[in-house]
Image (tube, rainbow, N blue to C red):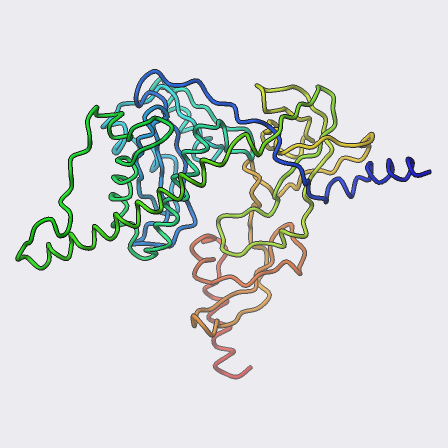
Length: 400
């Protein structure tokens, strides 16, 4: 009786979909082949969700996988594959030429036809991570996480002016000792020590403007040094010591871990904590490399079927009922956010801006959220709010 009860509980599909796993992440990090030339193999990523600074709100990070030398480039939303490519050519290719390979996640920019065709013509191989798992290899993961932590700390400290100091963030990163290569990225690329800077206090100047500029720069460089040191120490503890090796066989049934309400376009998030932790179960079709698997998804899913092992857990029982993936998710497993109806309007007492109570396609009415009318007009220009806001303002003025 006890064994039957335990087996019944283990095979419960509802529990398997909704209970979080207490085990360490599955799948050891698989290092890519070490490049044999500087700037022949690179990684790139976007750091988003930053406070706007002179209109800029995205950092495009490009790092050489051998020397760890990085370029931190400014972008602003909305950006296209063409804009990113132009920035890449202008700021990276003009200095180092086209790379032999690029490591990236599955961002829509890197999956676009324009991007693929550009680098096909350039003879560059594009290596993309498996779905919903950007950590393609240990080396790139540590560098990218370190850089992101470093830049986020820096931007958070200077929320309105970080863009004008980003070039110093790049300089300090490239002239700081990296334990993974034993020298600074600057030395690895140029074969010499970086030239000394003029530090505030080394010599006096009667020019008050220059004096203040040197003082401000030294303060910023000091903060950058501390942020980079903390980021590197934090990431040094990361990697395989907190991971475990997991393997599946063809034909195994597995549950797929997704975040269906992951969203980057709007500030508001849905009720993420109440959504299922896993979807499925789905059958394993084949193993891709050492840490990724191709799943037999339903045709309606329309997303890339290859996933990193850390997003999977073995199903207990026969798994007769398959839970379909939500049709309102895109290839990056992000919620396809489309406004459907406006329920009401209000003026935010703090910002004095008009907000609309928006219902979203694919979500029940209780998931409606208050959104800034300004943001809605910018992100959904075809969803006309202007006339509705004007009518509502007139009603408020007339006391209706």
